[in-house]
Image (tube, rainbow, N blue to C red; front, side, top):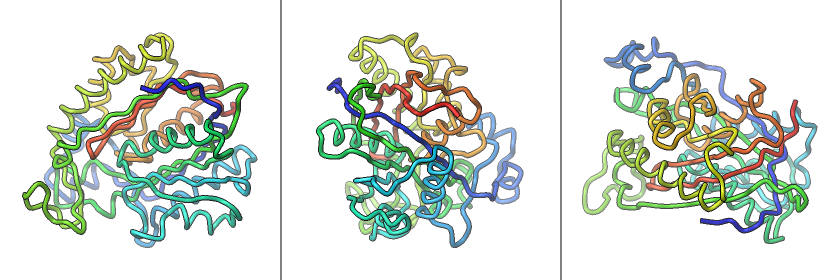
Length: 332
């Protein structure tokens, strides 16, 4: 639990999703499923799918361009780029370095982080800490994924879930009107076997891994962990911040599955009407899902400057991070 006074705020946001839509009707032609079955169990109707030669860096760049155009910002003086992704274009160079090159940012640090679906919230946590410490002044935090490229479209349990997209925010120094109020993190590495992609190692805890580089998930176990862990984490976070659910204008969890979100809301005491999510028409976009939900909230004129948000990322690891944030982005 962290309640160290912040000296940073979120000042701008941009998002991007690919043009191609993968509907439930499309999936009916690929595997034994139906629109009714998918909606009933996940709340998903569509996902966006990247092109054959469209990778995570391309989506992230488009999201940053949207940020620049929408808010009249520039990124030339950004002194750190953090990209949360589990699907980088390459193991290295990082997506962050590809972004630096594209925007010709002359003097900046750049790195990718992988906390899967909790990645964007971890990126915000790190950016706030570095700015509050005085080590940085302006950080670009990006969450981007091309999960369709690591999805097995013959596996009916996973192919219905995942989509592609990206979102980016600027986190800037602001000592007079800071935006980060409290945060909490937690990890249960023993659950790593329930959600993984094989890599250089093809065994875990002595057991052979499946999927051949595609996503493998034990949905039942991940669901049980999430609906047990998040309500407890939310309670601890709010208590530490001296707040209640009534002080939160918008709950913004990782958009893993609408039914999971509904269960978490019910257990934590949040109304679904005061919850922002991107899952219905974008699917599970891992590290991109929270910024995509925030972007939808802005465009739909739900999310306003000064609103108090509770963001909560959770996913493979298993790891999670929650935070209470004052929204510092000007109204459009």
